[in-house]
Image 1 (tube, rainbow, N blue to C red):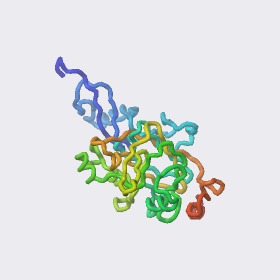
Image 2: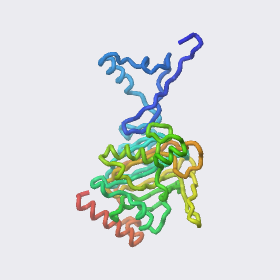
Image 3: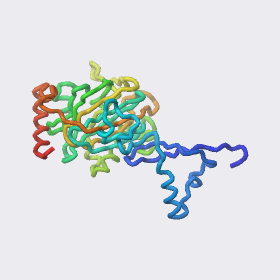
Image 4: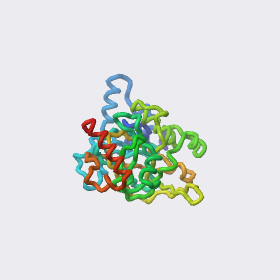
Length: 312
């Protein structure tokens, strides 16, 4: 370093254990050469170097244990948490959740867009069916008490709470081709990853391929259908909104936090997404949702029959 150079803080980009891109600020270093920051000339040095970084944290990361989350939802017992994570803009995550779990997404900035795929964790050929999710409730717009249904006529999850009201069950997520045309890049590790590309990576961790990925739904960026059939992007509802689901059967949950395909902004605009899940109970016959409509009652009976036969 010359006499006129100033020390530079390095912000290396990497992957945390669930695969989400994140940034992690290191201490000030006298050089921008990454190699000079790490002593790896021997196995012992490499071990010591790795252990010395064990306490570092990133802005986007899972919190382990989940009870250590600094963003725990109000009135949730920390000991009940089974999943706590902040997903980076352009990041993804995935988790297997037990029947009865509560799953909450928070949009702290107003720019998150949580694209969601659901699979039966026991038999992954059963998955979210967006057409039935719109058809069975006779309602195409997602909101509180709206069920998310599989193609087998079962309730996979239900929206139990919603302070956003800006969601989409029409467009699905972005593709590589779409992002390459709009942003010039669609690589999962690049500046503007597609939702489809991130879902492929998340699915692979559970033995699934791109052929297993159905259309999904997304939360926090609204879309409405105009009288002439055109789709209109509404954007988000502002910072501090949340969506909470009840998991009605064992689920594999895949999440991609990427810009909505109809977002007209020229830049890749997406904010961080907070995810929390905690132990709870599934919807039962005493809950008004269980018998809200004949169609929903039948779907819940199908779900209970499936789960109870497996001792769940």
